[in-house]
Length: 320
Image (cartoon, rainbow, N blue to C red; front, top):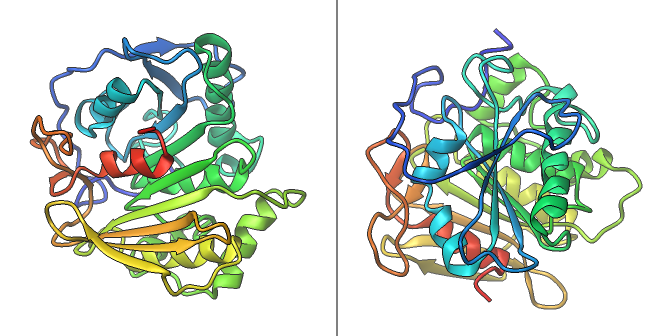
């Protein structure tokens, strides 16, 4: 059972997602380190790659693959536009029967261990092989990939400058199979201080700076309850020493996504929550050729709504 559990990338925890026709050219990289988490590494290198590019790690959802996520999420459009390097980490059925990142296993979510350590090694490889800028490293992911994004931000705050969690959960929301189900739905209630302690305990000697965090969640998600967006907000605002009342609110995109922003002392956005209306579990995309459009539908759980990858890219500051 433990091998099969994970955040689903679909409406059903165990329903397979059909593979979309491959469209994006990914490079397989095999020599990126000891790879204790037994993951696969793929790279998307745009023709306009900058000399010292930012690096964005992208993590797929359950039943998905690196190729499926690259083909449908819309991230490659902005890598082409802004010249950053994309690293797609991929898990396999050998790790998890549903191809979920093992976000609920302590052995895979502790610094220097398992899957998070493998992804850290991918970042190092991106620097040595492609000239990636270690000071501009970011991570985003969907569902189980979103939960693993939380884990990477907590365990490697000295590596990742910012992250975006899409339909995910807070770090250490669960540490075993049974608690994982409760974490996903209905969600777990803890104080902001308790949530923040989980992050601070991941690297006890780290005192900051802490990664900036964006949270994306559909308000009709029945697989990972929207309560998790609030818990992520509580976790990361408390880590940053901020209150849980937003400093700024607005609507963005073609569908009126509700944006809440929590500002640091210097006026920058430390934490952001984007609540996507009328969307269930998945990555919000907006197919089309417009400057603010991206992604593809037709594959399970890439949902026609707003081009979340465009806004995530801007949150990372990569449009400059």
